[in-house]
Length: 186
Image (tube, rainbow, N blue to C red; front, side, top):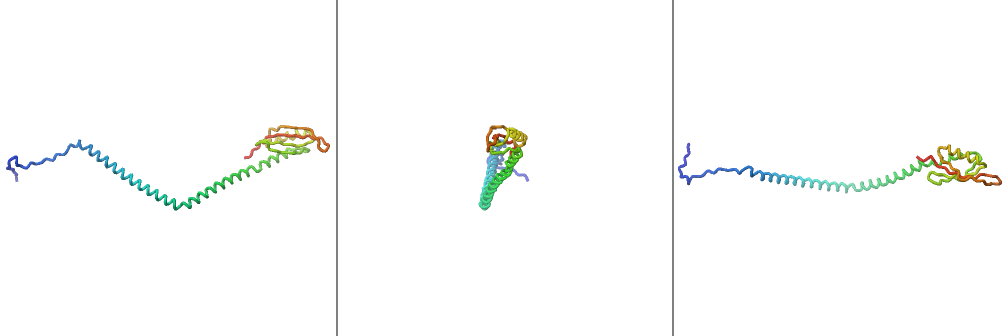
């Protein structure tokens, strides 16, 4: 069937054409909507992460509050262990060096020849000793100094004083020697 409109042109129903807006003019609007959508999505994600982190912090604080007595006990034990370790280190140091002076005096007694007596042994510095003694001859003093020089524990032997004296109407030689201790504790 064919339709014919017999109405005058003025009274005819005008067909409306739908005209779409120009797509080029709409691109900035779409871009603005997309950016706004991204910002809203980013904001929502950040808000959710902040809420999750706050919940984690609250949970960690609750856990720390529950564990506070154990934490204090651990801290006290750590302090006690450090103090004990410090004391043990001091004891180990003393134990390591305790035989050092014994070895020095033992080596000194091996170096003393017959008819020579020591009257004083004194540390005058961190590695320096002063030895005083009495004998009948300068040769015995020289022998004593040679023995000390040959010793692995003493070195730089120096005669400070060698003077004549008398003990019970006998002529004696009183001497003073300084020496360096070459052996150091480990």
